[in-house]
Image (cartoon, rainbow, N blue to C red; front, side, top):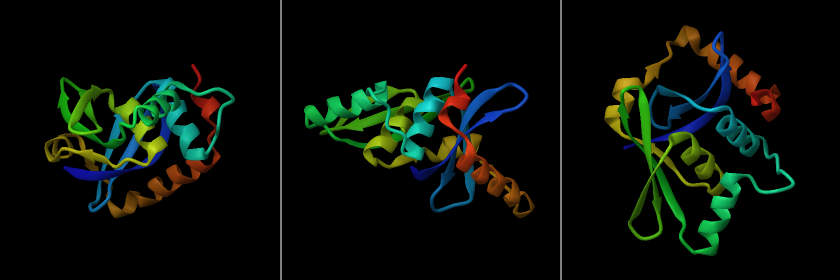
Length: 154
């Protein structure tokens, strides 16, 4: 397993499909995962420090885990099968729960849990951005500074 950090979310054109972009912490590969608009909003809210008046689903799950004293230790993106990513939540003492990567990432951001990815998934779906394309990554980061979670609403 390799640890990943969340670069951010954006809308891929021309399909208007949101993606979350992850980056290998001790490497140079990126992992783009296409996600739903609701999950994109949840991730963007947390990254930007937006606190909704009422808890979102991921906030509720964080609060339930805390109330049950069952901490989320990590998120693991375990598999890519037929272009679908699979992830597990590692909760409490040796509990593994299958979950969508987008929901897992939104929850991990809320509790500060590490996000890891199987080497096989990174080998299959990870991309290396050549040095000359690093400005594109910088432009993406600038975009993330200006985007609002409402931009992902249907």
